[in-house]
Image (tube, rainbow, N blue to C red):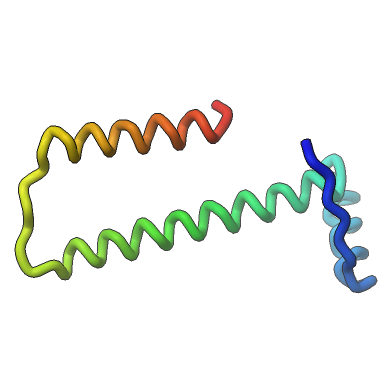
Length: 85
Protein backbone atom coordinates (compact mmCIF):
# COMPACT_ATOMS: atom_id res chain seq x y z
CA UNK A 1 0.00 0.00 0.00
CA UNK A 2 1.31 3.45 -0.89
CA UNK A 3 1.57 6.33 1.55
CA UNK A 4 0.26 9.85 1.03
CA UNK A 5 0.65 12.77 3.40
CA UNK A 6 -2.00 15.47 3.44
CA UNK A 7 -2.35 18.77 5.27
CA UNK A 8 -5.60 19.37 7.16
CA UNK A 9 -6.95 22.26 9.17
CA UNK A 10 -6.98 21.52 12.91
CA UNK A 11 -10.76 21.28 12.95
CA UNK A 12 -10.76 18.51 10.33
CA UNK A 13 -7.96 16.63 12.08
CA UNK A 14 -9.89 16.76 15.35
CA UNK A 15 -13.04 15.55 13.62
CA UNK A 16 -11.20 12.57 12.14
CA UNK A 17 -9.64 11.75 15.50
CA UNK A 18 -13.10 11.90 17.10
CA UNK A 19 -14.49 9.45 14.53
CA UNK A 20 -11.68 7.03 15.31
CA UNK A 21 -12.19 7.49 19.06
CA UNK A 22 -15.89 6.68 18.72
CA UNK A 23 -14.79 3.21 17.73
CA UNK A 24 -16.06 2.97 14.19
CA UNK A 25 -12.55 2.95 12.72
CA UNK A 26 -9.22 1.58 13.88
CA UNK A 27 -7.20 4.48 12.48
CA UNK A 28 -7.42 7.81 10.70
CA UNK A 29 -6.22 6.05 7.54
CA UNK A 30 -9.08 3.57 7.71
CA UNK A 31 -11.57 6.43 8.10
CA UNK A 32 -10.14 8.30 5.09
CA UNK A 33 -10.12 5.12 2.99
CA UNK A 34 -13.79 4.56 3.84
CA UNK A 35 -14.63 8.14 2.79
CA UNK A 36 -12.82 7.61 -0.52
CA UNK A 37 -14.62 4.31 -1.13
CA UNK A 38 -17.97 5.98 -0.49
CA UNK A 39 -17.07 8.80 -2.89
CA UNK A 40 -16.00 6.31 -5.57
CA UNK A 41 -19.26 4.39 -5.14
CA UNK A 42 -21.31 7.58 -5.38
CA UNK A 43 -19.52 8.71 -8.55
CA UNK A 44 -19.90 5.27 -10.14
CA UNK A 45 -23.61 5.27 -9.31
CA UNK A 46 -23.99 8.77 -10.76
CA UNK A 47 -22.23 7.74 -13.99
CA UNK A 48 -24.52 4.70 -14.26
CA UNK A 49 -27.61 6.85 -13.70
CA UNK A 50 -26.45 9.23 -16.44
CA UNK A 51 -25.98 6.32 -18.84
CA UNK A 52 -29.45 5.02 -17.99
CA UNK A 53 -30.97 8.46 -18.58
CA UNK A 54 -29.07 8.74 -21.85
CA UNK A 55 -30.44 5.38 -22.92
CA UNK A 56 -33.98 6.27 -21.91
CA UNK A 57 -33.86 9.50 -23.88
CA UNK A 58 -32.39 7.97 -27.04
CA UNK A 59 -34.80 8.15 -29.97
CA UNK A 60 -34.72 4.51 -31.06
CA UNK A 61 -33.90 1.42 -29.03
CA UNK A 62 -31.43 -1.02 -30.53
CA UNK A 63 -31.47 -4.76 -29.88
CA UNK A 64 -28.75 -6.25 -27.71
CA UNK A 65 -26.23 -8.35 -29.59
CA UNK A 66 -24.09 -11.23 -28.36
CA UNK A 67 -21.12 -8.82 -28.39
CA UNK A 68 -23.04 -6.38 -26.17
CA UNK A 69 -23.68 -9.11 -23.60
CA UNK A 70 -20.05 -10.24 -23.74
CA UNK A 71 -18.90 -6.64 -23.16
CA UNK A 72 -21.17 -6.45 -20.12
CA UNK A 73 -19.81 -9.75 -18.75
CA UNK A 74 -16.22 -8.59 -19.31
CA UNK A 75 -16.90 -5.28 -17.57
CA UNK A 76 -18.47 -7.04 -14.57
CA UNK A 77 -15.55 -9.49 -14.31
CA UNK A 78 -13.05 -6.60 -14.40
CA UNK A 79 -14.93 -4.69 -11.71
CA UNK A 80 -15.11 -7.80 -9.55
CA UNK A 81 -11.38 -8.47 -9.98
CA UNK A 82 -10.54 -4.83 -9.14
CA UNK A 83 -12.69 -4.94 -6.01
CA UNK A 84 -10.37 -7.56 -4.55
CA UNK A 85 -13.19 -9.96 -3.70
